[in-house]
Image (cartoon, rainbow, N blue to C red; front, side, top):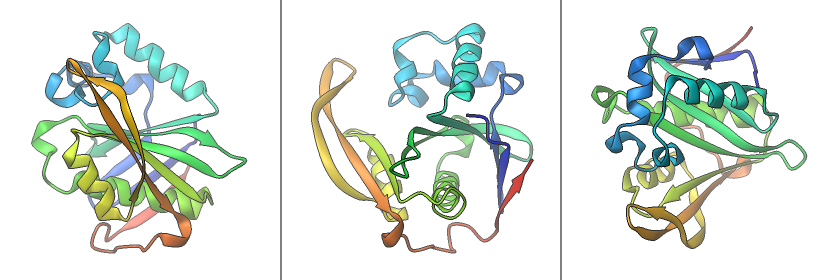
Length: 192
């Protein structure tokens, strides 16, 4: 769903990700086993055509919103809202930081905190969910740090390498959200 909103944090600009944002670097992240090991895109070699198709389909969907994460106007990752349910005011979120040099800098924390504020304050939703693979320790720590709690375990629901593993459902309700200013010192939404 094209939304026209740009979220500004101290270090980042989070804006609609469009076909014109596709680069060779982006396609290479999607094919890099270190980056895509927890992404569904890992099952298919990604090409410019397949990425364009996915972006266009996502932007046309009423149940998905795709944001590019930009630092100094350089694309460093994406986050997606998906399974958007406007009736029940609930959605899921996924985050990927594709540029390896941007890992371990607190960027995912900053993005998730901004996304949570956007969902609760701007969209007026009540519930945010995240599906986290059992082996994705970094994501588990991230969601816990921002206030999500583990609500469910889906046993052996995803194939990871050669085995079936569990996926955890992490949830944050609006009533349980406590804004942590240490994650974001500056936050604004620009409508355009």
